[in-house]
Length: 189
Image 1 (cartoon, helix red, strand yellow):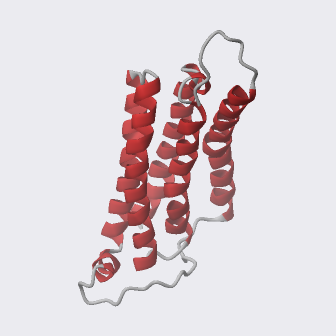
Image 2: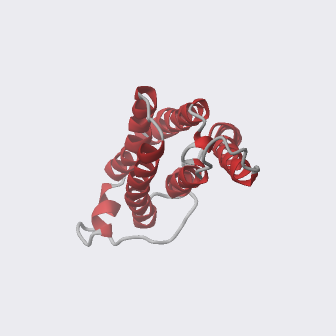
C-alpha cells in the first residue's frame, strides 16, 4: 500500500530528523538557561503524544481504535504545542530556523492522520457512526507491519534522534536547577 510506504520511508524519517534539528536549535540557544525544565518536559510530552499512536499505526491493523488514538494524539499535540510555544516565546528568542523546524513538527502528526484516514476511510467513517462498516476497536497486529530490520532501524533512530536528545536536554535543565547560584543571573527552569 503506497500510504504505508510514504509513512515508513518519508514521514517518519522527516519527523525524526526535524525533532533532532529542533533539539540542535535548543542546544545552541542554551535552553537550560532560559525556559529549562518546563519547556524540555513539554518536548518529551509532545514526543509521547504522537510517538505512541504512531507506533500503533505502524504495527497494528489501522482500524477505528488506531484512528481514534491518532486523532486524540493530534489534538493533544496541538494543545501541548501551543503551551510549548507560549513557554518558549516568553523566555527566549525562537529563531527563524527553529520556527521552520516547528512547521514540520506540527504538520507531521496531521499528515499521518490524513494519510492513514484516506487509506482506511471506511473505519474513519465508522468511528463517527457513518458508512457501512462497524467500527473495530480491537488491537490486532498488522500483516503489513515492517520487517525486523526496519523495526531495529526505527528503534535506533528514535533513540538517537528523539528520545536521547530530549532526555539530555531535560537533564541539562535539571542540572542547571541543582547547581548552586553564582549570583550572576537568574535560574529559570
